[in-house]
Length: 198
Image (tube, rainbow, N blue to C red; front, side):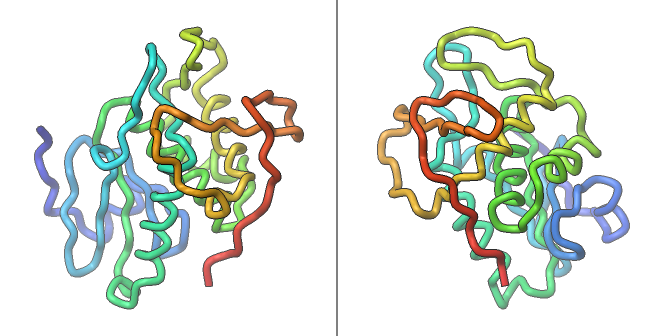
């Protein structure tokens, strides 16, 4: 479906990617697949983590999928084999997959990199300001801007998904209540911040 980019030098990284950890972790929205090289390790979850919709909704991905993403990325960041490589998490899917990928890396930054939601949100829109807003399961299209939608999703990472058991039914999507900003959810989960990466 997509062509593969093999010639992307170190000089291309700042221009195409958002840096979350200096010289180590990047996020990119690309039009083509990106190959790993001796200097970089690239991975994409566009096909691995797929949202199962009810109506016209397409995300955000549930906490079970966020948990899987956290485990995958944390393992890569702690890997001795990848310690000297730039890790690039990228998406080359449609706008729906782009929004979900941004949700994953933004939430990870809040949970594990000790970023404020506003800081993660600012990084994400610095290279791509066209994230489309998520739709609710009730088949209602909300008119809030895409950046506001993304900011709300990043705020949902104030819960610790690592403390939750895996959800086997992908249709039972969990939304959290956020007393801090008054956003109502299906139920409330105590908030907790995960330890920082060491």
